[in-house]
Length: 338
Image (cartoon, rainbow, N blue to C red; front, side):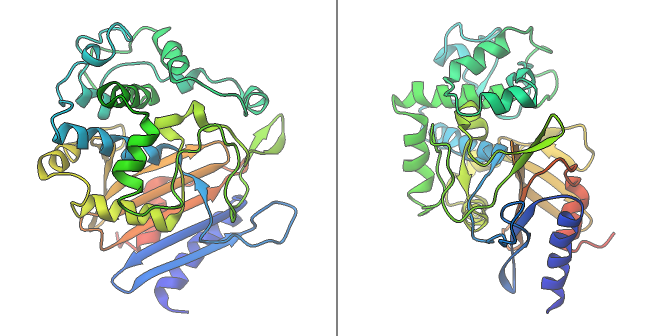
């Protein structure tokens, strides 16, 4: 086994040893792509994880949503400094002061609706329920904003639910249609989709789990309409790498909007700054762009060098084990030298 493949396989095996049910990766560099996996596709079996399999990408969805918004800005249908009230009048507090830029970079101060989701037992009980987007917005607006718009950054899924509602208001088309027409179809991403109320995953896929009352519950079947434009997409490692390569190589956005996407603000982590639906991570000798995501049963990391010549997308099928730290995980995956 070559050193690259050996390093990557050791990382995957260590994640399973630390408690993950299964893990898959696609890594790309000058030597081409390498796909690998470790663990089992379903607890209680010996079925291996298929590295080509589908998984729920969680908040990696936000890069897709931001790309659609920025395309509409490039076309003049929206403006970065448009106020929320222009498109969704009276829907959120201070909607006359919150801009699309602030929604995109999480500087609105709006409450994160997912902080009010029920405990694990309630999530399991309600896992197949349909959510309308305004349910999430109403949960958020039941709380006072955390700060004045633009004062600082605080990650909120509410921002990306609102962005999809604005997409729909500006285009008179469903968010899922704009996603398909603007990104998925042009890039021929046939395994990437917004599932709506379909709770199943395409084959092949590995199972993800969540700890509830001391027991692991299989969360593979899940209605992700609750997450929608903030975290509902299903994809594969190959297709996420394809999407980010197209984005970083200028295939999806005009130069002005791509530059705006990469204008970042500080976060709580020194190595991480947040742009418009994308993050900038500084590792030893390497700057990466991408996003991470989590949804019940699945954790995803998709990060890429600025020219997309080095890429990694990794999915973990969770149990009750603590997830790895992003910085340490990426240092190991990319073989960075401190």
